[in-house]
Length: 232
Ligand SMILES: N[C@@H](CCC(=O)N[C@@H](CS)C(=O)NCC(=O)O)C(=O)O
Image (cartoon, helix red, strand yellow):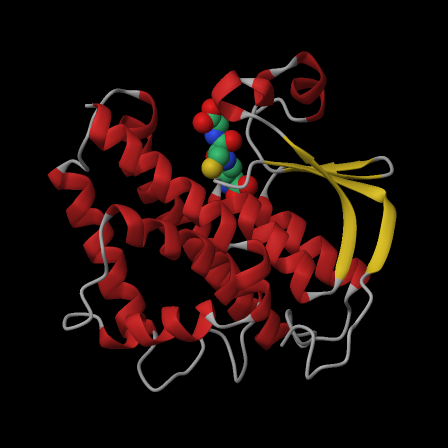
């Protein structure tokens, strides 16, 4: 995936599209990786969540939920990373590689996005928010056990598979790796208990878009968690 070999691929610029994002946020990184995997370049605006900029009047008009990412393509505004990635695939990268066109293959990837949205991400938020915003310097035991149980699900989902959704990484792998790589900072993945998940995360971390669009924000998140633990 990504830019193959030594040939430099110039990204296609979509000047009419804007992404408001914060690098430390997993769903923002999922969209950023999706863009890089599709070799698309759009206007990106950094929003400082610590200063509450995501709750500014301008962004609240665009996204009443006051969350990031927010994406705009002319009159269309989307505020969920999964919906944004599906839109980008259907509108600007209709090759079927990241999101299959056949109904069955497509549903398998959407199922993975629902797993991220409905199971993984809420567990990330429940574990991270007390550390990020409530002066807590550890992940609470109940949250650790919910995250371990999600790791167990993923370990089962990876039986006999290299990637979660097909013969190569798809939007499902991309969304899930944004969340799992961040969960791994909060509750390190035990490679003895979760060998398939550990190998999958390692394979994903070698994808070019992971390096260009996930690594920096993940590092920022890790440093921030580290700093908070030192202060508390
Ligand atoms: N389901 C949404 C989740 C978006 C979300 O909750 N983003 C977090 C950042 S990681 C946020 O903006 N939180 C608002 C806050 O912390 O005040 C998506 O996938 O885009």
